[in-house]
Every structure is written in C-alpha cells, then in structure tokens.
Length: 169
Image (tube, rainbow, N blue to C red):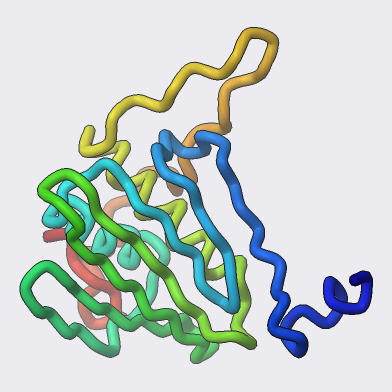
C-alpha cells in the first residue's frame, strides 16, 4: 500500500486530497485529483462565471478559449510561461454551482488550487457566497481570502487589454 501511495498516478489507486475545512468562506468540499481542483458551492451560476473572469484577470492570465452551453461554461487560460488551465463552471441548481480548475495530470496543482481559491475570494468580495461557518470552540478561523492588494492607477486588468488580461465584466 505504501507503493500505491507513492506511485498513485501509475496504480489507479490515487489518493485525493480533500479539504473539508471552510477556507476562503468556502461552503463546499474541495477535491484535488489528477490535476483538477473541484468544489461545488452555494452560489448562482452567473455569479460564479463573473467571479471566474475576475479571478483570471487578477491572476494576469490570458484567455485562450471560451465555450458556453446552457448551464455550463468552459474557459481556458494561459500564464506567461505558457502553462494552461481550463476552468469549468456548471450549474447544478439555481443556487448550487460546480467550479473545476484543470491543469492536466502533469500540471502544477498549485495553479488549479490558486484559481479555485481566487474564484471563491471574488465571490466572497461580491457577497455572492454565504458567510463561512464559525469554527468550533478552540479553533482559529480560516485565513482571509487570497486577494491581491488594490491595483494602482494604470495597472488594473481593465486598463491593460493589450497585455492579454481580461477586463472586469
């Protein structure tokens, strides 16, 4: 079994890292598996779509694809090194939405994790997520959302369209 844990990608017995804590006002559970970070949140589809676009802009990513079907949006982005990420937003109900960031089996899972955290931070900042649950007595609250400091004049994502960044909707 130790070998299976060390060689998870080769055995089909891959361990998934599951975070059931309430980080970033997160209401769902985030699962990391084979280059994907997934969570289902108590948020409306349109709010999550807007948050995904704002998150990509804050992370200075270049959009390379947008594929929309009713209740589902697939966005692909690239960073300055050429690494790519695919973000899927999928409506489950009026108030429940899947968020998935996929960097591929050999991609940097930290990239996918940061993207999901930033989407959740954007939802939190717009008031589109319920407040996080209070931690049990004796435990510290989760850290604040991953949000960069406010942009200086001339450096906001909306001001730099020629640099491949997305404008805020």
